[in-house]
Image (cartoon, rainbow, N blue to C red; front, side, top):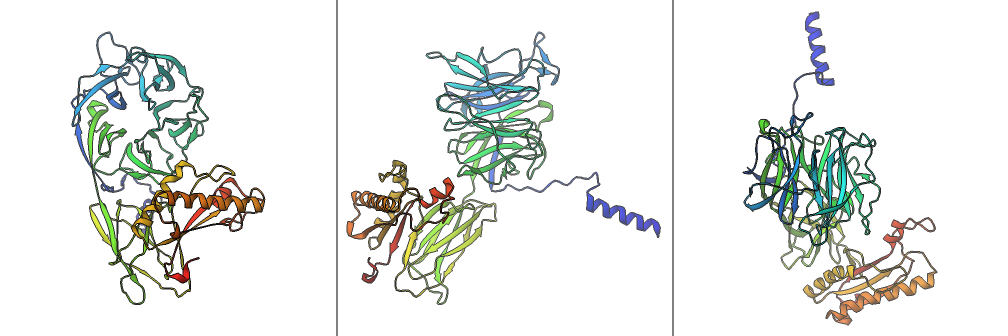
Length: 521
C-alpha cells in the first residue's frame, strides 16, 4: 500500500512540475497558410542560406567551395562562408552560383547581406578574426558608374566586443535597419533590433523590438516585404514546432502584433530561417531538414486562403432588413480595414483573413451605433454568416459620424496636407454613391493658442475640407461646415496634454445628416 502511494505522488509531481523526459510539442496546423515547398537545384552537401536580391540576382551565403587549399573554419569544420549571386530562372530554378564581390568576400566568414532600396548602399555582416561565430556589421557604398565595386567600407558604431550582430535587413522605405544580436539587454540569447537610418546616412540608437517579438530563446532573421505591413522572422520561441520556426507579425501604427507561426506547410521540427519574398506569393527560405546537408535553400509558393464574412443588417425588434446602413470592418487594434453602405437588401460582405479577430460596427440614422466582435476561427477557405441586429432609437435628429482617417494640417495653418487627400477621396466616393446624403464638416483644434484664434482656425479648416469636396463635383448645398475651436476636446487634458493628446484633439469630423428637411442645419 505504501509503494502504491509513493508511485501516485511521483506521477502527480510529473504532471504538476513537468519532471519527465517525454516532451510534447504543440500541435500546429497550417494556421491559414498553404505553402508549397520545393528544393532548389543548387543545394550541395554544404550550407547554403539565402539573403535576398541585388539587381534581380539572388544572393546566398555558402561554405560550398571546398578544396585542398581552402581554409576551414574550426568551429563548423566547413570552409569559411562566402557570398554568391545566382540568376533566377523561374519556378525556383537557379543558375550556377558565381562569387558575388571580390571586395566583400574575405578570408573570414561572410554573413547575410542587405541593400538600400536604390541598391547603392550595402549592409553586411562578417565574422571577427578572433571568433568565427561572432559577427560584426559593416556598411559600404557602390562606386558611381561601377558594376559592383563597393567602396568606403565602414564598421558600424554600435558594434561592441563579445557581441555578435547578424542578419541585417534594410526596411522597404530605406529608413530603418533591422538585425539580430546578443546584446546585453537581449531578452534571450539573440533578439531582433531596429535602428533608424537618417537622411544623411547616419544611424540612430538601436532599439530592441520588445517582448511582443523577442523571447527568452533566439530570435533572428528579420525581413519585411515591400508592402511594409508584416514582419517575418525566425524564432526558437513563441508557439513552436521545434528548432527555428518562421513567424509573421502584422505592423500597424508602428506597433508589432502578436506573432503567428506560418504553420506546418513550411515549418518542421528542424530549423527554418532566412525567409524572403520574390513576389507576393512566392519566395525562398533555408532549412536544415536534410541533416546531412547543413542548410539548403528552398523555394515556396503561397496559396492565399480567402475567407469572407457576410450577412444582413436586421431590426432587433422586427427582424426586418435595414437598408442604407454604414458597416465598418476594423482589425484587432480598431484600425479600419473596409467600409460600405448596404443597399435595399440590407446585406454586407467583407473579405477577411483566417484566424484573426475583428470588430464590425454599424451606423444608421434612427438606430444606435452598434459593435460586434468576430473571430475567423477556421484555417481553410470559408464563408462565415453573421446577421447583425441593431436597435432603433426615436429622436428628432440623428447625426451619424463617418469614421475615416484624420485630416492633417501644419501647425496654425488651414491648408490641407496632400497626405489627407486619400481620406477626402473616400468621403467623395460615399457622397457619389449616395446622392441624397448631406454632410456636415466639423473641425476641432487643440488648446494651444487663444480660444478666439482656435475658433477662427477651425472654421477655416472646415471650409478647406468643404472646398476640396466642391472642387471635386460635390454640390455645395449638400455640405455644411462648422468650426468648434478647442471647445469639444476628445481628451479633456487642460494644461497637462501630451503630444498624443493634442494630436487626438486636432481633428476634422464628417457627420452624415438625415436627409429630411427638419434635420438640415
